Image 1: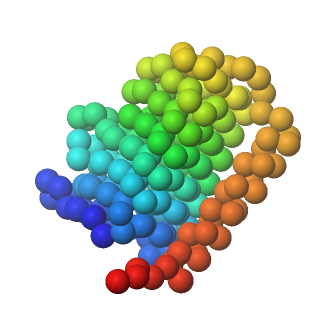
Image 2: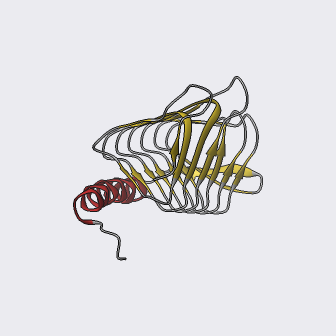
Length: 174
């Protein structure tokens, strides 16, 4: 599994997390319990810390990186979809970052924010709780509906179950 110490900093990964053998975690990273770090995901905490709260899913080919002197904070029960790219961001609990989205330096998503697939969230954007953002550049489109929030909850729980199943039953085939 490509997990690397860098500049004296070692990743700290909960034994209740699942990190796929083809994901890469480097440096000052902390991964909470019930997390799923999927194949091809890269968490590069070489310039600063990356914290991933419990129950968070970082899916295939997502990239998380930090600038010198900055940090990434991802709260509990967050979904970061395939091919998303995050740099120097803060995501509070229960956020969703859609497939192929880009969140630039200094973006803050308060609790329950949904970033639509393919969105580019501009540097420094502060997104209030419970909002849906979309576009390039991303703009607030509307409030997250109760149906959307329920779908997010369902997705979070499914990925927690999947992380447990991977820990228990994934085996390589020679």
